Length: 394
Image 1: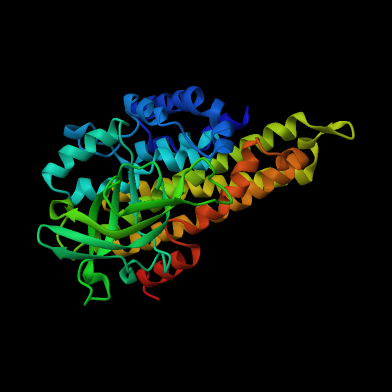
Image 2: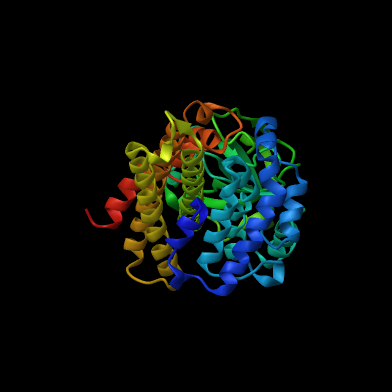
């Protein structure tokens, strides 16, 4: 049994229908043909071709969970998990982050945007013609959204936006930005937060690319707003009511990040097992050595426990089963567990591959230097533990 089939055998069949598995085959074929052969090249070039978005849109991969009338495909959580898991098989988190930046940038528009905004923005992004991004984090802080400092002051039928955002995925190439702003400067907390749709060519809106330890293929930027005039029609939802939308978006982002981490864990396990079977030292394959077999089992334990927690929470999110506060806490714990497990699997895979694991161009090398962004983005490990403790009542 090869490594892929070993992990497939651990999958709980009760969660997946024949349609789910057919979709998995579609995504895997797309990644194998359109992404995997070029992932290292794009990583080194620090960019992803815009044509990739169009191809993904034509394949129906960008519309998961969005309304059909705008070009989307309504679906359960398991289709989204499959997409994230299979996309991770290219072993380049920056590619996945870029291609899926709309999955965090568009939901606020789909949930709370005006009909005119939805008709204008959603079809273009879901078809891959345009790119969407989310802009929450600021130089002064990330997870503490209620303390954001970017302001939007009403001036007639426009808002005038001043401030900055940082660490924004697709910040350079995106066309549409869902931006968290403070529309009530007198309210220094959650009550003064709103969401606005900004567009890349608005006067006064500039972007600076950022250099990163990993996710090279994902353009990441600091955004600068200097007296940017944004039509009031670009308000997403109600004024000063943006904070709950952001929080809802975070919960979705966290389960998506956990699914991606799960996929990357599987890559580490598969590559480590394949290497251990083929690599011969002192006359024997590495896999014949107990210390290596134990490392592989330790990886499999983390892969399988992450899968179990991920699938259980996906099932309950779909059905809104249980206490909502507890569910939020468990999503936070899922993210922590998934990222810690990914860190362990990436480190162990590089160790098993030895010198080859240290070479640029291997999947495990890329994943190893991308571990930290997963432990920080979408809510740091420390913030997640604090959130979980509050939701669980201690």
